[in-house]
Structures are given as C-alpha cells and as structure tokens.
Length: 340
Image (cartoon, rainbow, N blue to C red; front, top):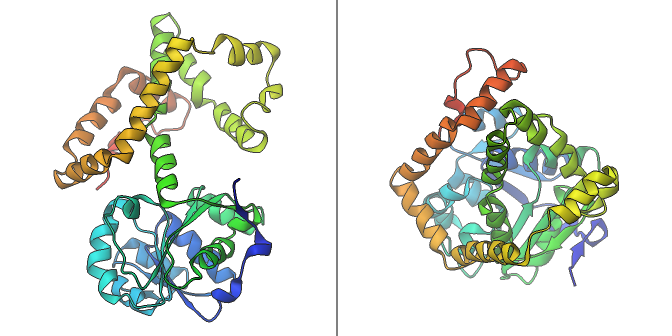
C-alpha cells in the first residue's frame, strides 16, 4: 500500500539549528530556498557567478561558491540540472562532504544510474516535487501544498527518512502529501513521461486532420492553442481520469470511452512500445546515449530540433500565433534552439 506523509508526520526539529545549502538557484532552487526561509530555517545558496547568483542576492540570500556552501551545509540540496550534476559533484561537493551531512537530490537520475556515488557516511535522500517551480512557490503561499516523491538511497544516520520527510514538509509538500518512493521509481516515471511521445502524437493527429481537409489553424486551436487542454489536465488532477468525464457532453464521453478504445492488437503494440521505453531506461542505454550526445555537442538533438521547428505544422502554428497576437510579427525561432 502507498505510504504518504503529511504535516503531522513532519519533524521540523531535524532542520532547526541546521544550515540548509541550496546548490543551484534555478527554477526549483529559488522557490525551495524561498519556502525554507519563510519557514524560519537557515538557508545559504551555492551557485556559480552568473545571473542566478545575482538574483539570489537580490532576494536577500548569502551566496557562496558551490564548494563553500557544500562545506557549510548540514543539508545539501543538489538542485542544478541533471546533466551538470556529476561534474559539479566531483569538483565542488565530494571533496567537502563530512559524516552526518544529508545529500538531497531533486530527481533519481544520477544516483540511479551510478553517475554519482556518495560516500557511506552521509545520508542520501530524494525530495522530488511533482510540480514546476512556480507551482511549488504558489502552492506554498496559498497553503494547498503539492505532490512530492521522497526516497532513501542511503541511511547512514538512521534518520534519513525522517530528514527527507522534514524537508518535504518544510518546502510545503506534506500539506498535500509526500509519497514514499525510490530513486529508481522516480526515474522510470519521469523518463516515461518524457519519452512516451506526446508531442509527436499531437502533431500526427493534426497532420491527419489537415490531410483530411481541415485547416491547420482549426486543428491547432482545437487541440491545444485554445488552452482548453490545460483545463482538462487540471480536471484529471482534481477529479481523476475517468471521473472528470461528466464535465463533457455525452457525445464526447462516448467518443473518449468507446470509439477511441484500441483494438486488442493495437493495444498490444502500444504496450510493447512502452515496455521498450522502460527496457531502454532500465538497461542504462538511454543514460549512455544521453552522455554521448552531450559529449559530442548535441549533434542529434540539434538536427532533430531543426527538423521539428521547420515542420509545416509548426510553421503554421507560428503564423497562427502571430495572428492571435501571441508572437510579435517579426518574432524569430531562436528561442527554440537547443540550450547549452
């Protein structure tokens, strides 16, 4: 049975009198640091000298180098990008670890794949909000909370789980409930969502509609540009996949439940595809491919990004968004370049 932790399970005494070092002041680092400070905890920020460090100072935080923060902190929240973590860990964190510290990851990726191997004398836990940074902050301020997966990879102190629950509570998750999970489980769920091809599926549907004589504009508005899908996603979250169906017309409900149901053969093919994704993740092949892609300077990603941006449907989308006033008339697509 799933095990959840709520506010009544949180031992904030494990955080009081301790220094919490937030390493990385990006989307998650900033909001978690703000939430922790609002809760009355001692927070320092570790970041390289860049715009994020400037923003942290403007927010009133003491900003140290990553190495200084790792030395000072009792809890080290490693909230920099997954692909940058191994190098940063090796250079700025590992040399300064000491017994009794708690190393906190925001995702399971690097520990699951063995790209980071902490020493035996520190606790290694995961506190992974299932919410974008802005939502973590907003739901903390409005006291609704947000879902979070927590896990323990290494329990050197005997208090690792209690410490993970305390951090989840301090950033606001346990108001809604933090679910006990694992580094492996979080990695599988996260990568399955990213690899299951949702964007390509939507584009294929629109291509078929256009081939059938529908205008690209009508298809794009009907599927996502109207914003209706975001309301439906919120209904899934609030009510559940099937229990949100009464919000739709009977015609819509019949189409979603009956007409759209796959044949047994198509269902088996779809499951085979999804199981292949899991096998690719579990075998480590995806991690190896991703590391090779980074080392080579992202050639495959850049090539496919150029193809996707040049696709006729996406070109039609850009033109539509200009007509709708969502893009300036002279807007270019440089924002869709692969990020460094």
